[in-house]
Amino acid sequence: MCEFTEANKPKNTTVCRSGGIVLPDPTRRTVVCGLLAGLVAPVSLAACSSETPAANPPAGGSSGSGGSPLAKLADVPVGSGAIVDGPSGKVLIVRPSENEVKGLDPVCPHAGVTVSQPAGGTITCPGHGSVFDAATGDMKKGPATTGLTPIPVKISGDSVVTA
Image 1: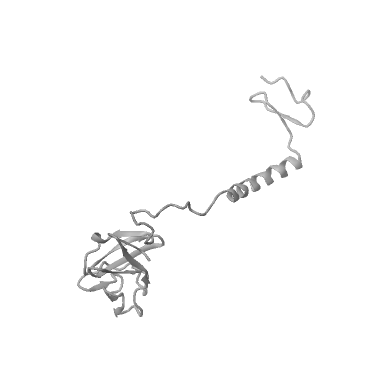
Image 2: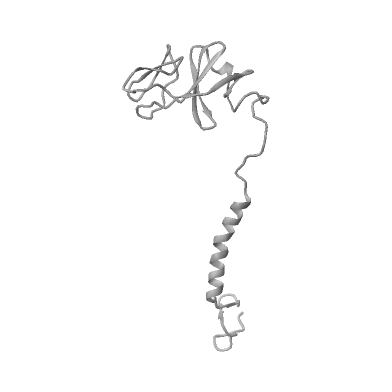
């Protein structure tokens, strides 16, 4: 076990009674240096990391001609739409005609409720009943006082991508 006792221990040390380890008493310098090291190390590691994503080609088979892929064009029915995950949140993609798509923020400007998918030429907010035009996002009936916010999208090959 421990060969040191309080009477014969080396100067400025603490005798550990459980495992025979003799530890030096911490000085103000060792405490301050330990605290500084604990504070500086995370900052140093953060400075070494990179927030810039690696330059990878866009996923989904778009060859540089489009932005971030949102959906396959076949998944967005003509005369209707689909709510999908975009790079900055949800996007309501509407497809008024075979070769036309529009992106809209699916959050109702009245109370922040996510609107329903288009049906019968309209988009309805389930929160308070606001109605929007399915082709444009324009407000048709309140309580909302404005239409849905446009999000730029386009067709790229067989996909809908951010513009």
